[in-house]
Length: 526
Image 1 (cartoon, rainbow, N blue to C red):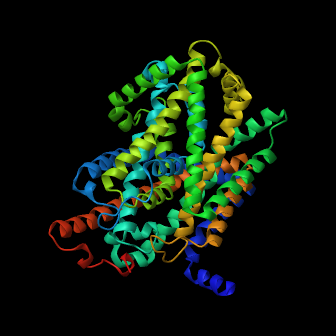
Image 2 (image 1 turned 90 degrees about the horizontal axis):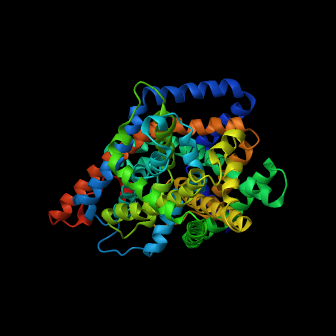
Image 3 (image 1 turned 60 degrees about the horizontal axis):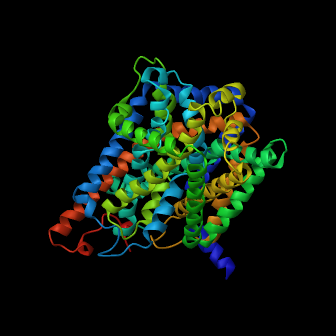
């Protein structure tokens, strides 16, 4: 019986889509380790070209995505329900919002919340803009705000429509392009789209740990009074892997429980810093001012290219962020679209902004402004400490040490980061598992062995890359480069969605039952 199940799974899996991106990433890792200088030179040249010469492309895609999300929400498309008839949502608002927020963000939100303003304060662009007080709290809200979340949300409704309205049996990027590509979806163009998507997924996943995992290992070393080492980092990765593997194998119920736990830990940490940090008034007032400054200057921030390259700020920051979020669009929107069954397009987009921006802004306003307040009021020379050490992780530890019961706060911070990583990688592993099948009904779950394979694989790359800091940075650059074709695929998906959704609305509003509508392709429904 077990042999028959294994044979069936092998036949159902899309081995080409799984194997080729894996081999490419493996070859890149080998080249980074054994040919570090030449490989670094090549990919840095490509990244420089994309950022310097084609940077406007990334900025245009970002601003366009945000405008399009508002259009989708408030146009005739907003009333489309991601389900059949009057189907009700699968999850409560809290469960849905928790899974959406935690799947779209990894632990790097906590890392950047505590230290991003420090990096901006060191940039010469701050002197051009005005004061650190005014702008170092605004830019984090911009780079983690409406535009990044719009990438997720416009694709989430596209995938949700594909899965829950059209009943597609292929949970792939290429399938979302079928209304535009037609039969070419099953040929070379569709296969190329899927290979690029899986490659970007693996590269983005392997590199996201480079941002925050060292902070967790630094916390562990600080609490234990030992020297930080790669083995501590590996141990943390293994613990994280065990947690999210257990949950992803259990399916959506396990992911929902983990997401709820993550949210409780996250807001518990923020409430503690806000109430007991001694900077409550400053945090609230600076946050309120930063939101106002963002709204007032949103368009100019979104379109700033620094044509004279006086500081190259947008190339170093804004373009980097848009590219990084675009790479993550391979996984998070699929998951959000999947859990949004029963909700309308308008509800999904506006709810996504409420939960996504609400959690993100709260994190940066409280944690970021707390550390900024230490600098402004002379309680801790945060900038001086970072300038002297060049180490953001020890600087963050010093910031947390200013709080009452600092060791307990450090433990809470580490647990929250592990929960964030575990929850986001739950979603990624589930999407990657679904992506591995040639066909998979919308309500079906991938086999637990396939989920286990991806859960372990997604962790092996970061562990391997820990032994070479240079290779980790290189692969992060690769993920940014991968965002260029991902941006083109995003445009194809959106054109396809509008084409398909328009036909759906025309038939619905014309009185013809949708089930009588001719399906575009055989994979659209049973």
